[in-house]
Image (cartoon, rainbow, N blue to C red; front, side, top):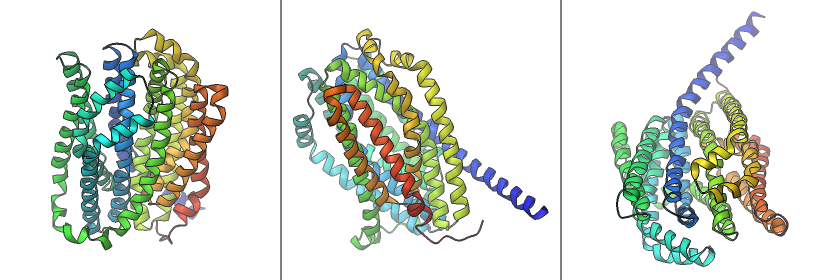
Length: 453
């Protein structure tokens, strides 16, 4: 009995220790993540008060254009974060800096391509995305200004992945808060207090992104003792880039699939007119507000699962997964209650256009159910990234994007835009089911772990 009690007490102490680490990573990440949608919300709010619904549509379409570019670059954050976390767990500081060097090199290559192909990209995009001429005109104005933030935006993905992999959630939090504060202040000032008008929103974003890059470089100096491990030429040899490219190519496919869903959602919404485009944009923004809370714990799962995977510590990895799921489930329940009780009020925060507000009311039930349907896949995302189970992530998203388009095109003639929201929920269910069924093999069965506690 004494032995059993002693083991039980030891397990509880371990759980408290892991929970403390989770909260130490998750809470700063949540604060940082909350600021991300706030910037988009402020942009929408400024546009919503400058004129009619077409201005909101202009922000929606132009934001989608950059999401198609930059969310594809999200693989740099995920791949860098997972690989750095595992190297940190193995105490391999040389590989930590090699991964960072490879990430920044890749970021530079993609930045060049984005800037070189900017005109081709936007012209092709508007051959696919159908919207009113006024919305397209506004979106092009925004796009050709904000594109010059590309060097900063893409590099920031690598910095954030590096910080998270090093178990440091404070630095990304500081960077995101500063970016958001600068974005909100400069966008408002330039759009409302100067003659720039709508274009001022885009210029505010450019200023904010470079402010974040400068601050990230300053915070990176905390790790200057690791600079001696940087071997640029060796790191970027094709033989050395092989694993980095393999991991990140899977994550790139994942990002492309996700953006296929997001772009499909936005472009299909535009088919229903400017008012319903504004409705779908606002509801999606409010939906994603919940996801940023979950992502805080997903980042903690990414950092800690990568670390314990690198250490070969199966016991700590299992407990980390269990505790993170408990936290995320609680957030999903609270979010469901909040959306159910205050969904209309949240819509009113986004716009004072009564036509848009009234048109949004029939779609509020989709807002209510989203946290329940998404909590499992959002939580697994961070853990799968941490252990670099990237092939499973890739295959999961391929299945999800197929399910999304089949569902919408099968039901759009019957349900209209409700079919679009249903398709989005179906893709969440497919992701949750796939990752849950493959977790045992892809995470706990991927390596032979040490049995120490």
